[in-house]
Image (cartoon, rainbow over all chains, first blue to last red; front, side):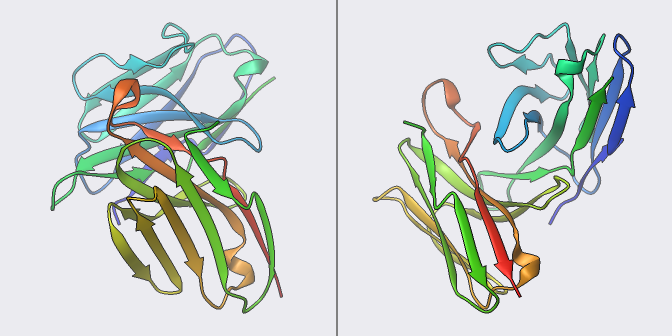
Length: 118
Length: 112
C-alpha cells in the first residue's frame, strides 16, 4: 500500500511555543489530506480537511487560528499548533487520500505525532 | 446512537482462536475501512470494502450493504494481532459527505 509519513513522531515543547508537524505522501500524490486528533482511549476526531492549493476546511469547534494547516503541494501538508498549551497535548494523525484506480478513493494514514506540551 | 457501532468493545482470545469483530452503521456509505492501531499509535489500513468480501493472509473482511453490517475475521490468531481494530465508513450524504466516520474501536488481546 501507499506510504504516508509524519515528522516528528514525538515532540515535547513548552507552553506558548508553536509546533509544526509535517505529513508527506511518499509514493503518491494526495488530492486531499486530513488531520485527526486522538485522545487516550478515544477514536479519531477529524480536525480539518485540506486540498492542495486551497484553504483548509475546519470542523466545527476547531480553531483555525490555533491549528494552522498548509497544503503546499500534492505530497506535503503541515499542521502548526500555535501558542501551544497543555490541553493541546494529544496524538495527531494525518491521512492522505487519492483517487483509486477503479474509481472511488483510497485513504492512507500516517504513523501519528505525539505532542506533549509542558 | 453513534453512526458506527462496533462490537465487542473488548475481546480476549487464546492464540489460535478464530476471532470476529462486528461493525454496524446507520448511514449511507460509499466504502468501509478496517484499520489496525497498535500500542504506540500508528494506524494501518487493513481493508477498504464497498461490497462482498476481501481476504489478506489470515484476515478476512466482509460487508453486507443491505444490512449495513461488516465483519472482520482473524483466523489462527496470534499475540501479534493484539491491537485496536477500528471500523470507519465513508458517508455519502449530508454534512459528512466523503468524510470518514469512525467506530469506537475494539481492543483485541491475544494470549499465548
